[in-house]
Amino acid sequence: MMKLATILSALHQIAPLEYAESWDNVGLLVGSSEKNVSLVMTCLTFTPTTLAEAMERQAQLVVCHHPIPFKPLARITNDTSTGKLLLQAIEAGIAIFSPHTAWDNAKKGINQQLADMLELTSVRPLQNFASGSVIDDSVGVGRYGYVHGQQPHTIEELFERLRKHIPDIQAKSTHTATHGVRKVGIVCGSGGSMLGMVASRGCDAMLTGEATYHQCLEAESRGIAMLLIGHHASESFAMKRLAQYLQADLKEVLVCTSERETSKF
Image (cartoon, rainbow, N blue to C red; front, side, top):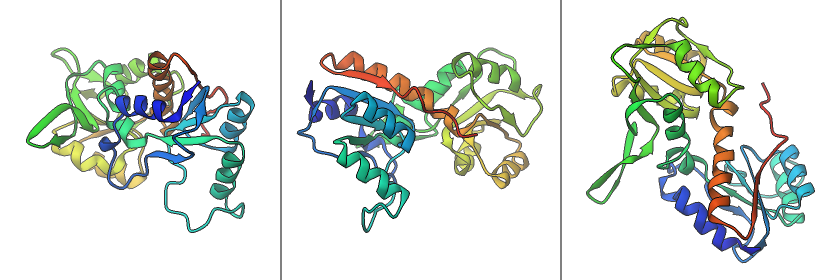
């Protein structure tokens, strides 16, 4: 058992909150840093299913990728689904932490992990974070890189590489399976709005979880193959990895990942 503040410090080392997008709501969202914690559970989204699982496991902290609440709340009551979940968590003594885009953008974060699965080379962020006058090429928004070797790789080859690590991907593309790709931009989750940044890096393919119909049409018009694997599939694997990182750092608590959370599609 240890203080929540110690766990927060470990989370900050893995995914510093300054790497989060300005619009995001990250960090400790429910609970006190002085709380004693013996069990931590990670999950992608805080839902009635994951809350019930956390309560059964007697977790004192849930690290969920997607923030709850995401937008400011005028009141917390059981009249809304978000308010009801928050009240139940508070009544059960469960603290909630969300790393969200800080974990997306971190040095070993979700986008970098996807780049590693694709075995890309010369990987860099789509947009760097500057620390004073120093630019760190290992952290930033999204990732982009080149397929290994001299020849283009087919879209199906890229999907197969992902399936080795994420068996439940829902693979879809705007281009045929045999279409050749040399340079890939990556934005996990719902990344279609980042298409312009991917195009500016000269990528001929973009990997993300989900994108709108019109974003896919825009990608096609720019000569960019949009590769979609499902929002859940593009991020949930990394919450297991986050649990592993935390467990390696924190010997006095048990860190587990939700076993009940599944894609809704």
